[in-house]
Length: 434
Image (cartoon, rainbow, N blue to C red; front, side, top):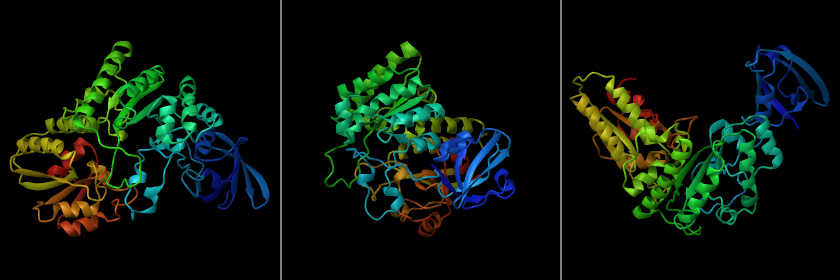
């Protein structure tokens, strides 16, 4: 077990001890280094014995540093080894539904517990062994987000198309008993794992309280590219309401027993059901924002709080917002409040149909540049166009179809500003504040 050092930061503790790019790091204080988790965990000691190798020659250096000081080593990849990819063939897998021609990285199926800890992504546990579970517990890698989907072993195997899906359910109590906080995700498919199966999953997971942090209930996402895949369909309004009713009954029981709702339907379930999205206090700690649970409630509360701090005054400004068809009615409500507060302000919200993915995809985060350009063609956009920053990949300004913010600006003829899902930032952008 070892990793090759790609770079050494000048003046860092490692550089001062003569460590060079190309050296291989084998262990820290006799603990083998396999990846970024080992490195971060063992690097926190103030006195470190680094076992290295230069070519075929092993050598050791001793470093003294502050507990939170970095050694100054850089590696080929952030994880320091290859990313663990998915071994499942889930019946609802979104990547299997992607259109052809997107950038290669979008087709990578991630199922890496390290990514769960570092970035909040979800793992199914089917890639892990008991040794991996013991390592997670030893390193206190908490919380871990787990894609459970069903606690009935046979149903979970059927949904994940992986025989290990049943046996790895036993890792959940191991993690909880080891002091690791678990957040669970249930991607619900009509007629598959909802109804009685959902009631069983909720009941089984509730047994892990308080080690269980929360449960997200998410409707299956279906694109228009499902040729040859498992026959799934979107939720009807009545079916969505039934999911909400099951969740409500469970929440009432959990509130009485534990003082927490524990399970939270994604915003999309309320929209599908034609029901109002709850206020911010409903979501308690907002544990699963990345799963679309409470995004709207938090944005609305932040926006209202920011708006309350402002004095009403005239403002001559016209601005447009491009967003998914699901969020457009909600953003229109906030736009109306801003216009009322600032006479002369005009905010036009433009719902953009998703032509790239098609099907029932209507969320803002999956909009691409070409769809926005097409949806905005011929419209008077005012002084500036606001777009959700989640439409762009983190490291650059590229959309899913590899178009860019400058490209969209050229097509629309107005400045384009990406805005985070933050109510205060949204209000500033609407008012033209940098």
